[in-house]
Length: 119
Image (tube, helix red, strand yellow):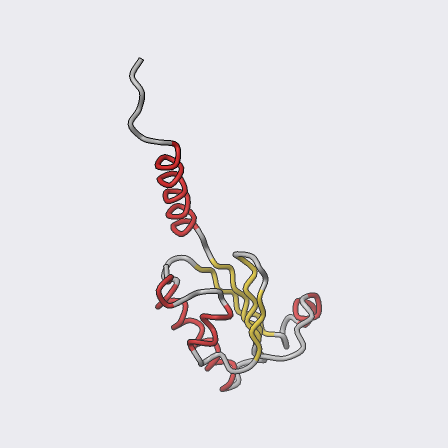
């Protein structure tokens, strides 16, 4: 019986590398943006988040916009007390970003994304 030339550590490293690659390929961000109507601040928050997601998560995110005036029960259930608020549901851990969402560096940190890790 022939013995394989790959050692266990080499096989393990290859396997872990493939797992990491698969995780990044399938990982999808589930985001909820809570806004207050069609105010300038709300539309700016939406535009900023949409641009950041397209740049760094293209094809790997789902963004739901919730107007807390039209759906106050959703805001109450999630304990949203200020708007705009961006909630990252997935991947874990849950994160909330409140206020000015136009600073890309702040949003990337809040989403646990480094610029070099963009999908």
